[in-house]
Length: 109
Image (cartoon, rainbow, N blue to C red):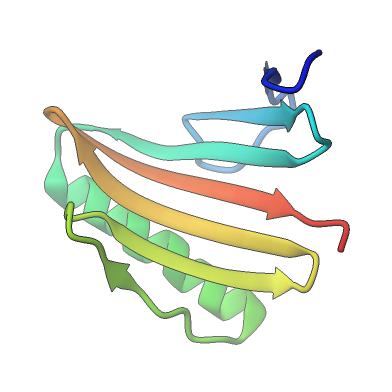
């Protein structure tokens, strides 16, 4: 692997309600887990999936997770369940397809 390379591997561990999941390994040692919770054309289903996932996280961790709306219309909810882990939950539209996507980014520092 050289400085510009990264490897993407399918995650072989079942993630509840996930449509797909993969791990990205960057050349510098950074790793992230990307999980697709919803991919389809229903705005209602995408919104429900996003809201339910955020609500479940809030119940598990006993926190309120803030949310932002970007200029492109993407809903983003981010928080750090641990100092060494960041979680980003996004709902966005790409062409005619709506997606709810979770990215877990562990940090060694």
